[in-house]
Amino acid sequence: MSGSIINVSIDGRPVAVAEGATVLDAARELGIDVPTMCYLKDAKPFTSCMVCLVEDTASQKLLPACSSLAQDGMTIRTDTAQVHEARQRALELLLSEHVGDCEGPCRCACPVHLDIPRLLRAVGRADWRSARSIVDDAQPPCVGEQDCKAPCERVCRRNQVDAAVSNSHYGSISSRSVIPSLPRDLLIIENTGDLLRQAQHRLSTSLEMTDQTRHECLQNENCCAAVSIRAVVRCVAGLDVEATAGPSVEAFVRNVSVIGKLMAEEHPVMMRDVSAASRVVAVDPDGGYAADEATREAARCMHCDCRKGHDCALRDYAIAYEADQRHYAGGGRRPFEQITQHADILYEPGKCIRCGICVRITEREREPLGLTFIGRGFDVRIGVPFEGSLAEGLREVARDCAEACPTGALCVRKEAQQ
Image (tube, rainbow, N blue to C red; front, side, top):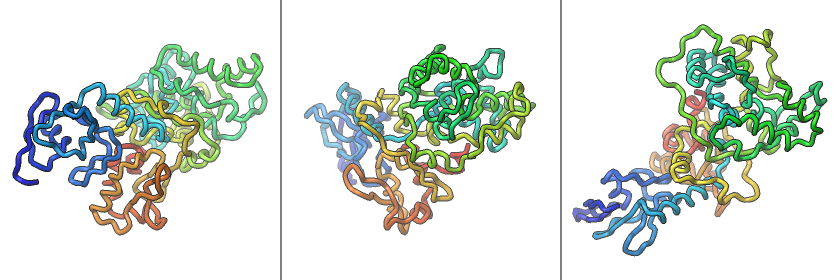
């Protein structure tokens, strides 16, 4: 930048910046929040996400703040209806290709939004203090006097994966036919007292069963291969351990991205590193699981929730701008993928918005192979050059890339298990 000073006005507030500064630089100088998802400090602008759009009042045109240079006398608005709608549409385009759940279906269905996936991970590694903290925070009805009907187990995706379930009430029926793809609005609506009733009704009306068989299926608590969440929760609540100090559970916020029913080819991907064992039968079925039983049952969880669900810029902005994933939805979606070649990080390409941040980090830090854009047009993706593995491409800056990723596409393995 040279020594010249540029005077601009943003949302009615004047600011002076050095020549060569962008509109985004000027806005941040004033403390005005302009959303960004492809911006990387001290790197050349990439201008791909288009969520940083602002309005130039003179021309009434929308400009990407991250790459538009501030001009002397420029008047910018960041808060107009046109700006809000443009950002909303940009986010909806990104969401339309997003393959992943923000929260697991089990937590969405729980009347008190118990963080079930995180609880199961804590139980799976025998971290009983953390598990107790998660249960105590939510105070789920399944450990009290109220008769919890375990709606979490009704929507557990394990039902879609395991083999046929044999039950005396309705014979042998494939779990994939028993638990169909639940309606999208069931997974994203805020909880109401009628949530279980809605789930049961929608489940029953979508099955090709006689009225009697349908009734018996819904009354039977063991008609699925779901993780026995209720028994795990009761086990944790009954342990004589102290909860970890301080807040341990992130507040529940609505889903902005939902996968829906799994495709057949996604079953082995979702089951990777997951116990293939059948549902654990408790020695004392009335008292919940013993600690070792709970640990074995927790290992059956498929980890449907996002590993960066509460550190995701896409989710935060989608909620702020009321973006709807269905606005640009087509007739189908890409399959869920998970690349596990790296010892330190996981890569889920379906969550990648192709912002190029990880590519620029590897270029800046001079990774021998690094990451690059592969393909063209709608088929472009991030990958390692020359068909290398993720471990070969990210030898030095894997954690830096994962921490800078604005979605859950790249995440640190160790933290993913917490």
